[in-house]
Length: 226
Image 1: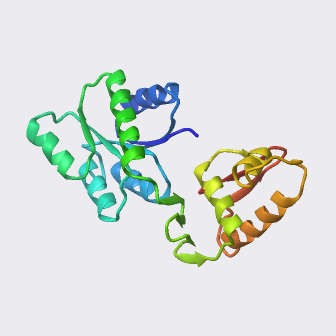
Image 2: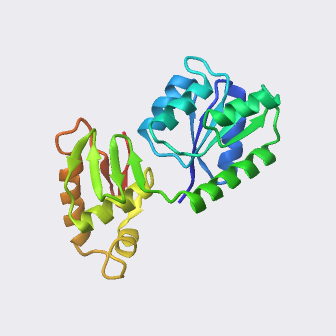
């Protein structure tokens, strides 16, 4: 599964170069051009890491990080800034940043630092919550909510939703579901998947303004925020 990185950077040229560099390195990338939009995106969707410019319009980078940390969001954050004095770095790290890279920077170094953050997060902070848009799963409490509303799922439905969220934004084929959720192989034409998808869709989408669980005709299924 591709690692999903959110870049919050107001300089369009820098953002474009960084986006292309990350995509070439195999990452999925989303870009926000100001702090307010970046904060909103970070709260609504699930990202593996954030790359945040310190000086941003509407809401500065440190305020974005502080707000996320105050709500328990521990997504790794790499701060980018033209402010490169020791005091500046200390301030950024104390605000909740995990690493601090002064501008101008070499893309190779940024990629190395990002890889280190992702490795550190995987080994020290097991993911206990998954989120796509306003849909959230707590893997420890085994609970699911959407827009704050509790959703009661059967064990197989819970496992199915977890698999879909872990592949959010990607088309998941029937074979992938049979192997990843049911853990064995049998005729992919069986209707067991259709039955469970239908039940799950009724529970997580019914009564909401838009459907998150979508059928990709001829390919499989996808869950995404909008």
